[in-house]
Length: 253
Image (tube, rainbow, N blue to C red; front, side, top):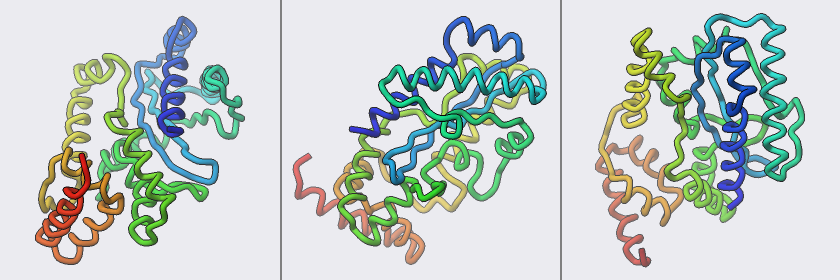
C-alpha cells in the first residue's frame, strides 16, 4: 500500500520537525505559540503525493531574515527525516516552502460557499496542481470512463485514509487560544459543523458504515449521487442507493 506508506512518512517527518530541544529553542526565540496542520493527498505522474499545509501562529510577524532562518530550520529537519525513512532527500523546490502571514488571514477567514471546512479540512474538494488529481477528480473520471486504474486508486485512498485526521492542532494550543481570544473553540465548531453539513442544502443522510460498503462496491458512487441529486433531488438518490445496495448484497461482506 504505497499511499499508506508515504502518508506515514509525511506524518512522522512532521513529528520529527517539531520534536526535541532544537524545536523548543527556536519556538522560544521566534515566539511560535502553536500550529494548525491540514493533510492533503493528490495523485500525479509520480504517484501519490501526500503533503501538509501548516499555519504557524506567532507573537508577531517575522522579518524576512528570520523567516529565512525558520524555513532553513524546517527544510533541514524535514529533509533529514525523509532521508532517514529511506527516501531521496527533497530538493529546496519540492521540500518546505514558508511564506509570510499576509495571506493567512484571508485563508483562515475565507467563508465562501465552500466555507473554512472545505478550504482546510476537505482537500477532496480541491483541484490538484500541475497535472495532479484530487480524490474527487479521480472519482468523477472513474464515473465517466470506468478505468480500472482509477478504481484501484479510489480503493487505495479509502483504505489508506480511513480514520486519519486531516486537521490537527498542536497540543494545548487550541484551548489556550480559546481562553485568550475566544475564537478557537468556535473555529473548531464551525469546521466540524461544516464537515458534517457542508455549505449546501441538506437533502438526506446515510450512515458511514453503509456508505463505506456501497462505495467499496461501486467507487463511482459519489459522482453518481451528486448527479442524481442535481437532476431529481433526494428521491433519485434514495433509488440509486437502493439499487447499489441490492448489488452489494450479492457479494460477501
